[in-house]
Length: 465
Image 1 (cartoon, rainbow, N blue to C red):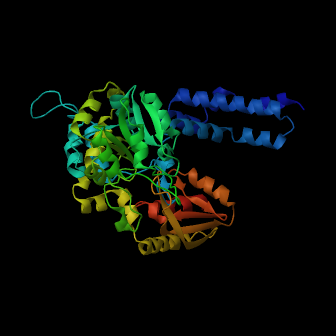
Image 2: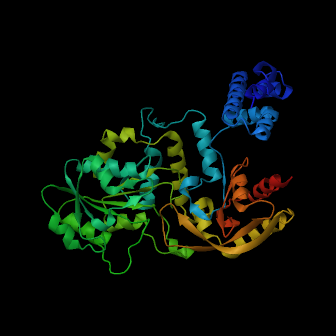
Image 3: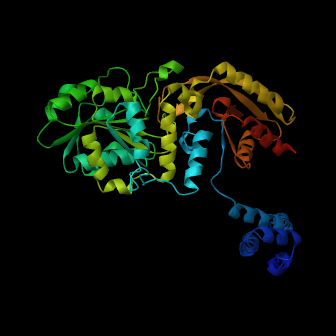
């Protein structure tokens, strides 16, 4: 096979650059980028010819579509990778999709702050340097009952900072059944080791008693640690120590009790028909000295690790050198202040915090919304559309056994495979992410935000022009 014949069919780069479509592209992007992509596409075609000289039809197709290939590559390289997506999975705190969405109101307020200068570390009253924690510390203490508070970039950092500040080179006692791993390989023993604290395991996987803690207290003990097992449950023959009893033991031996409560619930979830999840307020009232929790889980805020508790310990944590390495930025500080402001009035939080709104949605309301969207999608003849009952979940390592009744638009493509349809939806300008069940694509409307239904219709319809 004469491969040189194919090579001669490939237009020269300077000729390609004179193509009208390429010239238009160069005018709105970077000419250097277009030139780079042109060379890359032609080089790839030559490489394909060398490796596949007998595939005449495929070679001809590549050469015929060379302009389209260049435009596609330029658009891909010049577009943003991080995009808004529509979450139709039914998982409210979807870690891969950014966990808790932020309200428009909070986002707008943060936008006003981060697009200019702000008083992030400036005290407007005194005119001297201030603290970035001051903007939300009083609100957190008012809501939780803690004496003081700060925030770092995530909850793993919060645990690391607390232990580094309070227990370096000393022992920390924790139940064996609470040595959890929470997403992204965050393991409690590893974080403790990194902090310089010495792990002392007590009890067994399924049973730990108060006496197990007390028997291991020594002159080397710096703290007692309790970790809420938010992403799994041990059921059956089990026993654990309440935070009230552990706090009393800490007071008896003058040892701080630290609790990693995980998801950071500030609202009683039983009002949504969910299993009771310990609240931050309950732990503080029970006597915990230092508590930490995530900002982007059940709290419904940005990624952060919030630390609250007794002032004597929080002040020491604030002064630790590691705090500067894990501190939050102005964007996170602005969002945290907005979210905690919502919680001053719980009714306001239920209306404004998207995570809480999704958890309390009525299944019948979701069904009606799904029926409306399904009716529009039935205009597309290539799809078989129905509405079916399904179950949403909390996600993000919170309430792993909870299932919330919901409804989904069920789509069965008739002119392509379901896998192909799902892939096309992922590649839309606004990607639609759902789940595939029994060769059917499901969009759970519980996690589809207000105003996104028309975007779903428009996106799916664009695939069948």
